[in-house]
Length: 375
Length: 117
Image (cartoon, rainbow over all chains, first blue to last red; front, side, top):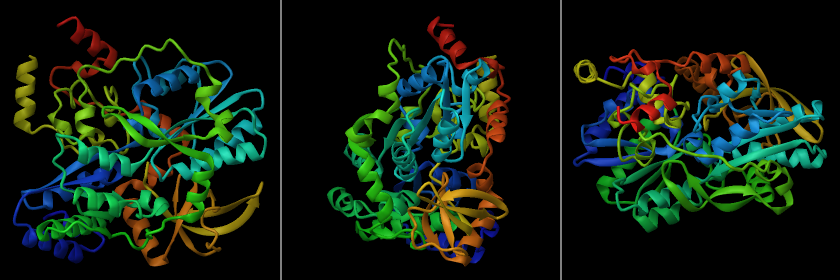
């Protein structure tokens, strides 16, 4: 437990970890949905403090990781068009399309920008009336209110040269899909704290009941994660399956009313393909009829895209929790953050990037044997 | 990307009908939309994701979280500037993999594997 002293409150962390060791009598598999939590778990070595049987399965909560390759390719095609300013968040730059990525498009003269907020894209459109400004609006429920507001403002201000390339995905349908999969072995979930800061957790009791799984709303700090895991293990050991809120300083049952109101005004539920996972019914949002004019997919008719995943990339298995990143043959060898084969190696929320950046790849022996094999 | 970090609201203005605030994240100040947190006033702490305040938070929790996120490098990630983002993409880490295949691009690897080498 060498990491515990580095935490904000080492004593409390020690107590929580000790309680998990005392309570756990059997192996349990717990999934943290959110990629931000995956990074915190790996960076802080939380998984290594747990009793041997308690396994953290890393979930699909990495928006750029689950954005379909076809949409990445479409984004790249739009970004390469003359007269377009293509805007996104920073961790989209290296996400590999079939042939290229946004970073390379920029290198070839494309006007690719990294923005802090989608509102900056609306401002950019106002300042550049002769350009088409496109914002790549990917994300879970946490990011959706920001993208919704950008479209709402663009419409209200009559900004005709702004559009949103939307790929919003939703957590509850993903939980349902994971639990319904024949290969599922997840027995409890840590729900993503900031998703719940927007949406609340009123959607989760039905899932906990239907699938008889504990769901614990959990934050991002080491203590939050230990507490979430502790509560999940206690429920599992007692045979309970309730929704608990371990992130009360941020999350309420109802969530953010103002944000939910604008989301309902701008978006409608749609089926979405998740990269590496496949189609999940009613698992995303798209702009509704009143705002369809701002949909970049409508504005730019991109066709003839040839989309092809790397045959070496096992990102789908990683995103479904079927394997750990180092279980992929290409991990850390052909696939690195510099030359990623899949989006999970790129994003600040991708599980492969977490394992790579925090040195969770190969043991010295494995490295040596990998060298021997390749030589 | 679902990270949200706490900051202190230092000033509130209305810009084009939108309630905006200057929010200080441990020294870095950003323009943040406050439309989703109508209860927040100057001096309050709020958690912010991609330029949008999502929820009020008490001062002590906010300061502790800020301190921890700074140590974890999470502040840099959320407040990254455009130049930093491009520099990071350019300098993304590359492993010293044993056989040197890391110099290949994804496309090269695909072609290599397709040609059965």
